[in-house]
Image 1 (spheres, helix red, strand yellow):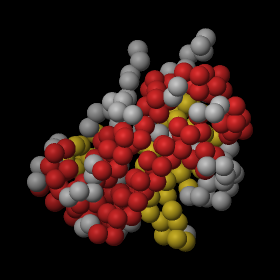
Image 2 (cartoon, helix red, strand yellow; image 1 turned 90 degrees about the vertical axis):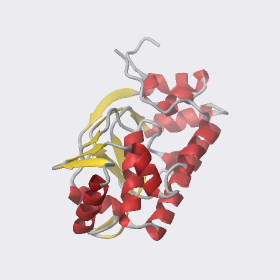
Image 3 (spheres, helix red, strand yellow; image 1 turned 180 degrees about the vertical axis):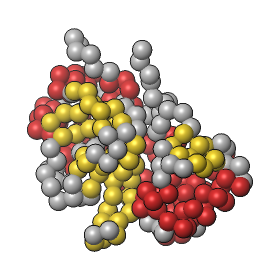
Image 4 (cartoon, helix red, strand yellow; image 1 turned 45 degrees about the horizontal axis):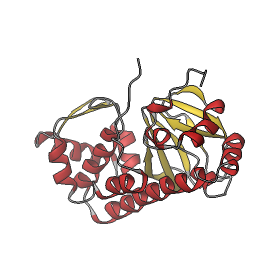
Length: 244
């Protein structure tokens, strides 16, 4: 590889067979994705596939205008463009950046060509798609059966898994949309978690102080889907590799 591409910052690319990775690398390019950058639009053709290297993207389902909720999170463990892996060319939901991210991106047409060329790339990436769907089913279960504090604890843990450090740049307003609850409920839930010493909440920022406490509070909502990711894709340590 003679290009300055660092696929090892994305844990999914790190898991690819060398032959499959070699099909993608010539078409990958570095990009920086600002907050709220749109990656996919519901019902629209997918133009690019993104492999985040840090930061976070949210997959958001809409019931109608201004009535929406997050159904999945994508960080450096994954990719956008799941529909392409399954043979479709259109996004089911909106996907946008919720924490600014460096990423590798490639044209959807190039990605589809790689899927057709390799006998192993699509089957492997289907395992990732399945893992993401497991995450989404747990989100549905937690949203239906857990209280706001438990849901918030799980969401913070999932974000903490995907960033460098323990500081999440996030507003109460954005949290209310992600969790599908009213903003006053988010404020109270943050106060509860802070009062128990699990987090420190500041204006536009949440600092994780006690992961084990958050895991206990999540009450089974966190951990199973994360274990399934490792089972399906291999137990590579899900930590971002910083390359000097």
